[in-house]
Image (cartoon, rainbow, N blue to C red; front, side, top):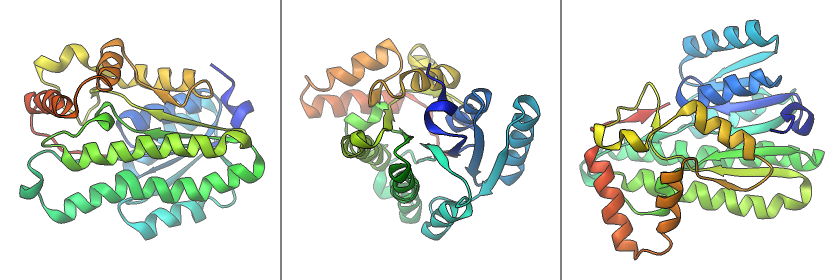
Length: 264
């Protein structure tokens, strides 16, 4: 793995940093010597993680409590760290709603779209422009294995991750000449404190530590990472299957999991 601090600068900003993949990114980047800005809604949790990272790795930390489903709060994140050079942005914050779209609360679905897509736009535009001026930086987008197919009961979530994947790939093409590495991370089911995994899907489920290690190892080498052999097979086989087959297969996997709502 490349020297992240040397390649991108002193500071990384991670959204959804209070748990799951976002927390693991925070811990891995701190261990690599980068100072970290931790962004999420749970201030007590962020403060605890920040203190642990500062004590363990002798790095600087900054905590920003923000609801990234709110446009104004998301824009405030950019201005709140105007005094820092953010060299690595991890767009990780996300919401997952499970169930029939028409039976769900409309405001919940709008919050999902704002968090999973709109916040990525705002933060990428704000920090990406500064990276472009410095001719150095990195952007990581948390997409998903679900990004490649329509999925019943995850209709809005899967569509939002499809947006994240294509957005990341397009941004990569635009920024190749400015020494900015872009990575779309497409994990499958991942063990975190917020996700219950059914026994049927347990064999295909990966630990968040492994997912993040694979992402950081490949940052700067490729613009797309699908962690895990089975996930790679599922991801790339969708290009050969008719779309309706992909929808049936992925929807069957979702149906086998317990009802859950993931909010970071």
